[in-house]
Image (cartoon, rainbow, N blue to C red; front, side, top):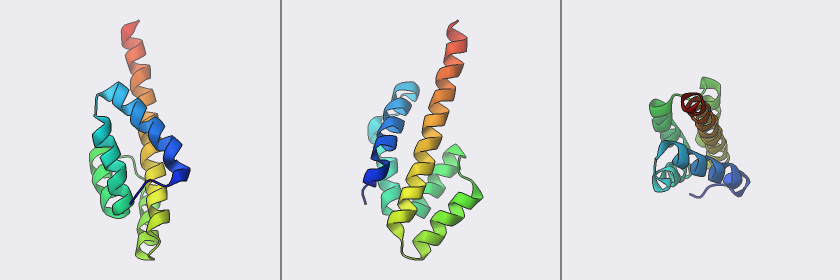
Length: 102
């Protein structure tokens, strides 16, 4: 299970920004995405339990695709949902830190 090439740039941005702002290791973040590629439904469920970012509609779409045997598309959607959430949260953290620094 590898990250889809179409998602690679967004994933890389998410990992770098999140690691810089939160201190979470890049290895841990890369592992999160590798787990999504291996088992999209299980991995995205665990990440959502931790970070609370997934809509029910997106989860249902990922699950339906994996149930149909289309794991690659399920992983792509899960990867995009997680990485875009990470980028959004990182930007919010940076914005909040900016307020604290002034």
